[in-house]
Length: 126
Image 1 (cartoon, rainbow, N blue to C red):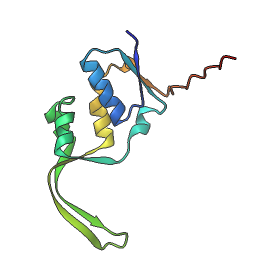
Image 2 (cartoon, rainbow, N blue to C red):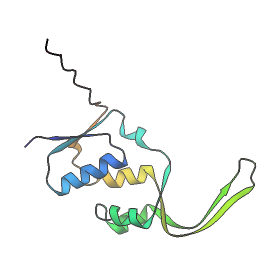
Image 3 (cartoon, helix red, strand yellow):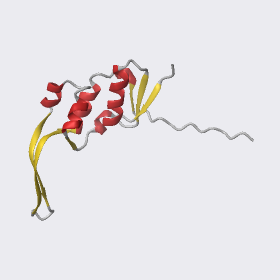
């Protein structure tokens, strides 16, 4: 069987790698950045996302790295309240924490950091 190339070690790439690892399908992840450069903003994860993630990550581990939000308030750049909404089962976590949790089940030899997957250029036949 051929090996699968997962391009990018962000949330989607690591989620795919966890699926492939769970089903014993051979793969490698190619990421052009260093792991430290993958940190970023946080995520608001709705109930459906929590259900998906807990198929990959232990629920208690996920919940140790964030918290449930009760209310969302949006402010303008001048500080005026623009909107307010009560939230139910919305979990907030940082991108850094989620990436660290998703890499726990992936053997490091399958994660190739600072290794872009270069396009293959095929010559046209005349």
